[in-house]
Image (cartoon, rainbow, N blue to C red; front, side):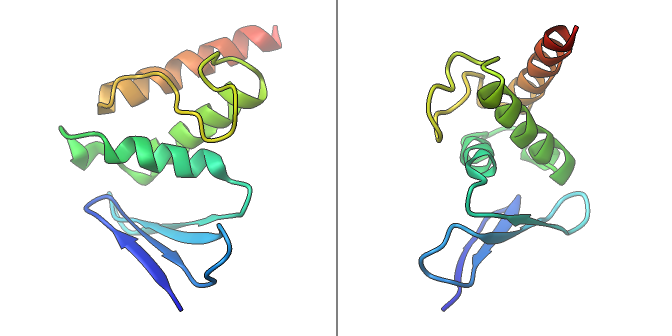
Length: 116
């Protein structure tokens, strides 16, 4: 049984019923797939937050959402975002494309400072 969730930004497909593994096809700028593994709650959160964006949805691309996913992972694993205390917690940023980009930039800066 294949479970499918689709919107104007992505298409999520899960082939096995009791697993969190998915194939996500991002539709912009050209279709590109991402294999989400069981433990990848970061991508789940990034997609759920992207669903809350109401303006400029055309800018929700593969590159932006994968970068958002990576920022959420960094923010959680390196304790750079105090809002991410447990898996599936949402980062605190506005539900806009600018808010997502700002979050990515902020976590990248904190990560660089942490490395120094």
